[in-house]
Amino acid sequence: MLVAAIAIPAVGGHGGAGFVAAADEVNLKPVDLAEPPPAEVTIVRDAKGGEIARFYEEYREIVGLDEIAEQMRTAIVAIEDFRFYEHGAIDVEGTLRALATNLQTGRTSQGGSSITQQYVKQVLLNSAGTEAERNAAIEASYARKLNELRYAMGIEQKYTKDQILEKYLNIAYFGASAYGVEAAAKRFFGVHAADLTLAQAATLAGAVQDPNATDPNLGPEHRERLLHRRNVVLNRMAELGKITAAEAAAAKATKLGYKGTRLPGGCEASKYPYFCLYVRHEILSNPDFGRTAKARLAMLNRGGLTIRTTLDPVAQAAAERAIKRYVHASDRPVAAEALVQPGSGAIRAMAASRRYGPDARKNEISYNVVADTAHGGAVSDCSRARR
Image 1 (cartoon, rainbow, N blue to C red):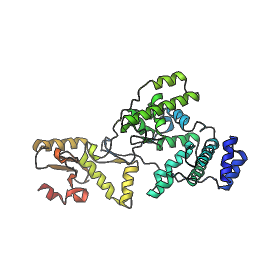
Image 2: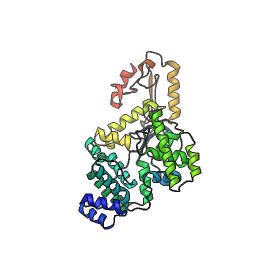
Image 3: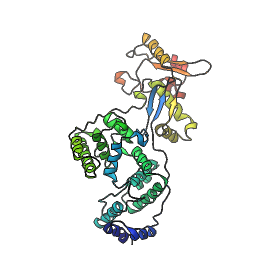
Image 4: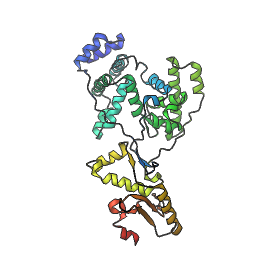
């Protein structure tokens, strides 16, 4: 019954009564999808609003659709789901034709997923709490595909097409550790998503199909694949009349232009690493941020928090100057200093004579030498630290 119902739209084009019958047989009804927020970057700031550090599991910055270049929106729709604004909850032509082909060949040779279905898949992947749930979200089975369709129908009832496209562009993985179009634009080209050129937009649109195979950070072979995908997208945009043949040719004539802009993050990259370590420890040990250690780590690395602290850059600079006047990074003894405001207990500075880092050969220290063990350091109390 299912094979026949799938085959009918593949031949007839629009599905009609055959699709309705198939939907009834397999209980293809809209299902509400739980949508936990995608992981975002947590930013730690000093008392003046300056950035101290960033923590993340997935580097992502959520932006609105109006903050994404129009040609980026056009490129992703052209290559991933060119009927996106025309079909309903399910692209019957694309999805069911792909299912029929896969059944006939005995393997998954066509995807046929709409942008809405791809969004559903990404949500399920991002919310997977176990390896089994993750495998279920990507397994090549018709049960998984039908579940995607049910969720997609629910999503299409819940949101407008523009809202779905915005959600998809913010959750998709583009490669090079960049999640979402804003992070990808910065990582690949050093620009905001709003400022992407045609060639850059086509590059990112081409990357989402198989971001691991086209990850430009992995070497020349991967970059060549990405360049090919970019040109496929440009050709498709021209074929659909979204750009002219001349515009496509001009964009294809440009170099890939991958910059590999470094994504900031972690205490090692911070201007104030010891204070950063202190803040991180306080978050991870405070049950207000989660009942378990795992929940607190997830909150820090995925929660998109803005953490405002008491560190004063002026006081911090003074503390660092005072230490350098007497103790050098190359000295065997280590000097550490914390400036705490009387009465309030606000920490204004945390400084040490050695750089924070994992390389002992460079005289770096890989723990918080300023704090005691109760606050993430390596000594049990301040009196021992003074000795």
